[in-house]
Image 1 (cartoon, one colour):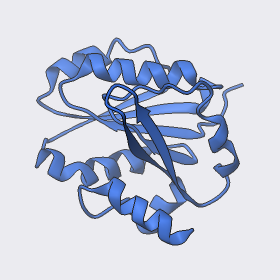
Image 2 (cartoon, rainbow, N blue to C red):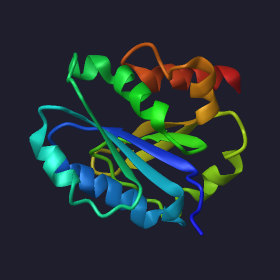
Image 3 (tube, rainbow, N blue to C red):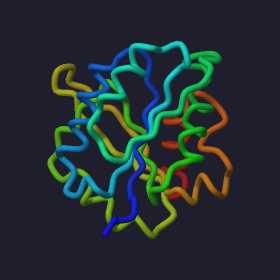
Length: 167
């Protein structure tokens, strides 16, 4: 029996296939049930190195969106919305292409939120630089209701502010 996708991991990337593979491997290998994951990647149409490498990635649920580079980072919100639009999971997890998940069973704390409309903040430590990164996890219904995640490239900051304000 095929399990329904519960977490859509969305990752825009450009020209860093080795870092991307390490990032996705860390999520996949440390997830309690990787069958619940889908990976949605967004690459630029001129990023041949990433396109070729991604074809060799072993994950069963992976989708690649290819499109114009537009304004690069300045169009991040457009790329995120493209990935959210086709996501199948209850939760959308925006993850960096140069990150590494260190927590075993990282998905278990998210399970209570599969049926709740929410915006969650997931803090990730980078030991090598003694700082932490905040990633957002948004219920798909937030995207469905708004029609977008953010209207500017600073999606993570906007979601953090909205998340704090909504309790």
